[in-house]
Image (tube, rainbow, N blue to C red):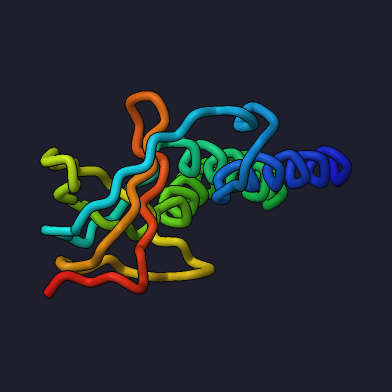
Length: 152
């Protein structure tokens, strides 16, 4: 059973590592991104909810841990309690802070999107900030501040 738990924890680690913000992959080489300059006109702080993955993974881990406790009906109760508690913890761990942002682009268009707070370099955008908006296909893939420009 210890081998099963250890294996599951390793797999869970790989699954959670996919939640981390990634750099570029081989598929990104040669992809065209269109860049637009603009000015942030509106921001709102938001909480990005768990999409269900954290809850499911937490429930599985909780069930495995709970199953190690007690015997008979007590074991069943501990497994059920571990499943519920793990689901709640997993869902809460898989939340992020972000911003809903509206940008007036220099070409006259206005775009809005949601960005996740970069925990390694937390910079909250504010109205008046000059930004570069990177678009690939129909998705905004990044909004980066231009630190040497600001509109007052």
